[in-house]
Image (cartoon, rainbow, N blue to C red; front, side):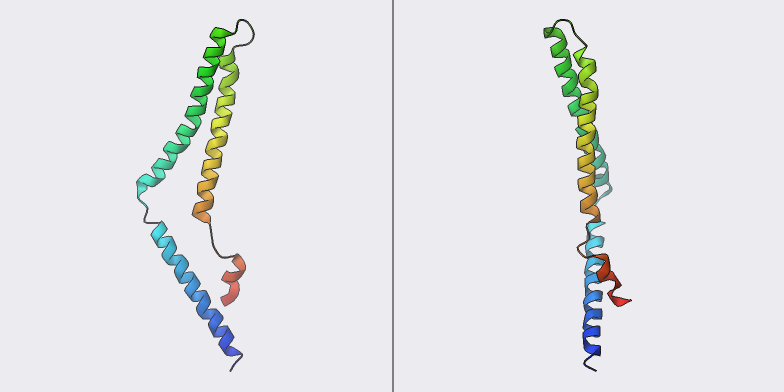
Amino acid sequence: MSDRKPHQERFHETVDRKAQRKRTEQIRNQQPLWSGFSLFGIVGWSVAIPTLVAIAVGIWLDRHVQGGPSWTLTLLPIGIGLGCLAAWRWVSHEEQQIHHQPETQEEDNDDQ
């Protein structure tokens, strides 16, 4: 009988942990639809701003530095690349927050 009590305690702890996770997910899923659209805006601006800054610097260099390559065309892909890198980092950070699980897969298998 004493052998059965630790199993029951583990079972109750597992049920409590899963219930808490379910409540947390329900709260998280109550975010409005606009929060998803705001992520698109942030990603768009994180690409657009570095690109526009690179173009502006390129135009300034083209006007002040004689000869050589077109700085605008040279800096344009650099700005796009930096913007895409910033957007990728932002999206991966948000994805980690969405999918963060405080427990491991092994703990879910306790009740099996």
